[in-house]
Image (cartoon, rainbow, N blue to C red):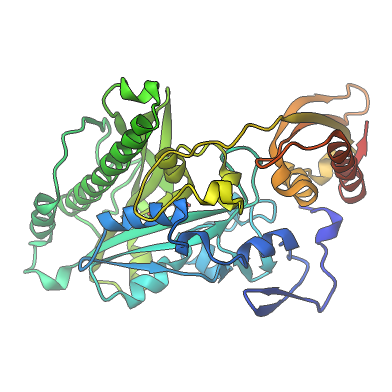
Amino acid sequence: MELFKSYRAPKDSKVTIGGTAYPTDEWTNVPSSIIGLADRKPRLYLDSNHPICITRKLIEGQFGAPEYKNHQIPNPVVSVHDNFDVLGFPPDHVGRSRTDTYYVNKDTVLRTHTSAHQAQHFREMDSDGYTLSADVYRRDAIDRSHYPVFHQMEGARLWDRNSVPQGKLAEAIWKDVEALPKHDIKVEDPNPTFHPERNPLQSEFHSPEEAEAVAAHLKRSLEGLIVQVMSKARQASIEAGDQASSDSQPLQVRWIEAYFPFTSPSWEIEVFWQGDWLELLGCGIVKQDLLNNSSCTSKIGWAWGIGLERIAMLLFGIPDIRLFWSQDPRFLSQFHHSRINHFRPFSKYPACPKDVAFWVKHPAKGFHENDVMEIVRDVGGDLIEDVKLVDEFTHPKTGRRSLCYRIVYRSLERTLTNMEINELHERVREKLEGEMDVELR
Ligand code: DAH
């Protein structure tokens, strides 16, 4: 698919990320604004008074030594092999496309998830389990819960067949399940642990008893985490005087079936939060091929991946994901390591919505919304709160598509002037027309 023109990097040029220069090619699509975020110091998850770091440590506390080792991996540049191939992503998976992923060059990307480090960690593991936290990057929509850089934590726990008498693996895992802390939350889990079509057992490698035991350990461990996180979130909310949470109902948690190329069976966990089911994490029983390719042929285990911003937004009552990147002392000074308190908004500055409408000149050539997002972000940066398609139609005679996007401009830190917004909007319009295959209306 054709991307917009500014992404055609000059031949033989280089892009520098974290002090290392990488050659660019026709795949390169990392804008300088993203490199700026990748290079930002201190890293949010290592900055002890930052909500992202406090959240990381809270979760690490549930998956601590000696059973788990807790890692952080500052360099976000990984190979396409590690980010996708090793994990079994099919060649045509949308995640691989240049509209969804930031390519440094054809063979190198900004990691789109912490799972990019699974194979290497399995290979080098010297504990039963680990967690791993890092910044991850995705070309995506712009709204209050999506930002092109965010943070994930990955957890994994393996058991070695060779360390127990033959045929006793499931029993040994169940012993570990029994040793986990219990909770008294009602959890909905209506589906069987595995299902031949929807969520298959890896029957070539695992007995049903083994998979049941691993699944039970995974689910009990994560339910413990969710109970801990949600009770802290609720407590912070009550301390902040939020009436809705102080008379709220008991915590509701449910497991649903999911799909990931690197686990089977797979699940997601959701909690009922402010009137909606909110997805908190993905997980499953690690594909045995992945373990076998990572020098772990005698091992079986589980893995999960969680978005730290989503948890931090719950814990700290942070309403907009851009705030995590704010350098405004009115934001940063509100948080202190090992304390979970609700964010007090300094002020709500006015929002200014502006529409831009255009014809897609050659619809057949391909048009991707994420390219619109990238252009808007490139011009407006953190002054953009939301970008949404508000109108769309196809001309009955010419077959051309017309799209109208509403861009909401709002600073988190001050009131924007009309002149400033008009100027930004004009630059967005020019850039859309100059760099994409569109005609403004
Ligand atoms: N990498 C997945 C994502 O970004 C999350 C995930 C799912 C991680 C399952 C895992 C896993 O380790 O086993 O959506």
